[in-house]
Amino acid sequence: MTCHSPESTETIENERRTDTESRVVDSDETRIAQTMKDLKNTGWYWGSLTANEAKEILQDASEGTFLLRDSTQRDYLFTISAMTSAGPTNLRIEYKEGKFKLDSVVLIRPKLKQFDSVVHLVEHYVQMSRTTSKRPSSGASQSLAPPNGTVQLLLTKPVYTATPSLQHLSRIAINNATRQVQELPLPNRLKNYLTDYSYNV
Image 1 (cartoon, rainbow, N blue to C red):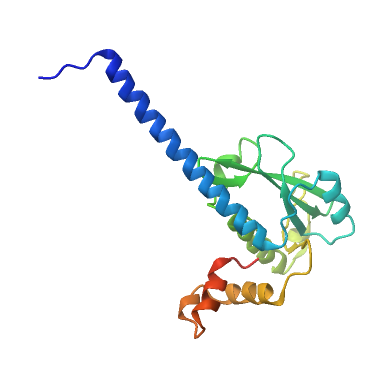
Image 2: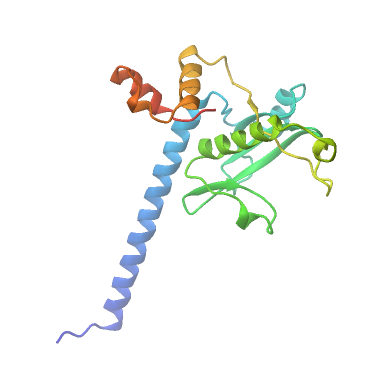
């Protein structure tokens, strides 16, 4: 029969906690590193742009035009700047427990979808916005602003930092048409290029 002193039990507990915390940090670092790699491939990630600079870029853009930038607030990593019917606005992206989601008021927060990557989050809301904007507008649903006076946020058209290459635009079009890239009659090098950025925005 072995007997553990309270001190050795406490040491074991602390080691377990430290090991768990270190795994969380590793997975967070991996997730954020992958997110940064994906973002650099998008062409619409602007890095350390200020809110005022984003506003200037979006000033004459149509509603639904957006870009992604680093957040200037310490508690957030990224911010979406988008043009709405009321002018440019900013929406922070929250990162918690390995997931990204839009920052929102406390009541709505539990209902918001969470994503493994920022690009996946943006892709989801772009698809939603494009579907919404394609719906035929009839009398009652024609209003751009919901009844409570808030402004509807649409994400339909990214603002690129530079003109994207034809290869990248083709990759987006192919990803938009199919998710079975491996089944396409293409050389492996091209398949690798397509799967390196598997988003359609």
